[in-house]
Length: 396
Image 1 (cartoon, rainbow, N blue to C red):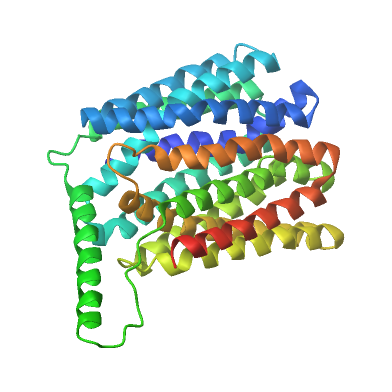
Image 2 (cartoon, rainbow, N blue to C red):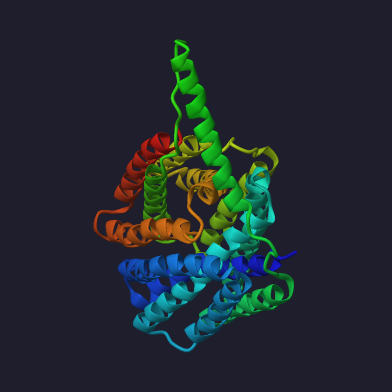
């Protein structure tokens, strides 16, 4: 039940994710403003994520930071309704992103400490599937509000109200765990296992037996680099994508929302599949496969664009499969991050994802404005391929 507040929070941001780029495009009259707003917000959220993660682990208090995040989102989204200045909206959005980041590290730690390591994949998958359902409903709300001609201020007030419900639900339902030790036990277990493998190999060598193996230690640097690259490619692709559907494919706002509903639906299926299939240590070989699959989908958007008669249908299918692939990727990498990243640095996962996302959120619209969307799809696909190679190194 403690997840209920996050459900309403994701409803609000699901609606906002498609509405805001289109709204900024209208009042700013340039796709570059979308990139400036998103990139500024994400760059500022990077140190904030690290700070929130360090602080919540240091104080061992998690609920208060979740409440700060939801309260800030409620207030600032209401302030959005009081201006149509794209500059002021950019400043407000940047401030909101700093405070909004406060809920991510505590949420990840809560799941890691409330469940054993063997249950992390399932717990993360259930959480993400539940909240992705909220995101999907938010997209459906966007489809309905745009179909019925709601004013932008009314949509922003709806987003603010949903965050207010999330704040109230979290205040009542979330409690901090009494004991915090699961991540420490996992770290100790990994150290002991590595030492035991080393001793076993050394014994074989001393006994003159052939040795065809060596102890392998997880490559944290490669894992972190893979996260940044994957997030970079995703942000390059997805930041300007609503505008591609709206302008290049000449779809209405409600039709764009409908496409993202299917994308979110693919994510929901992926999360619940992961919750049924995931087992301890099963995620490592799958991460790189998912990354290369997502890269292939990015290249497929180029083909879909050239096939004008079927571009909308093919783009919808590709978008749905991308949602499915991202769901599996997020579950596996979140579980691995809780295992690999040291205690006290719980915000590092969000820092890495934010770093790639911030760079990509500016690069994507800039490429779309100057070179066109074909270059956006090509470059995103190439970066996905580099991320695939990096993850292969990290989890081999």
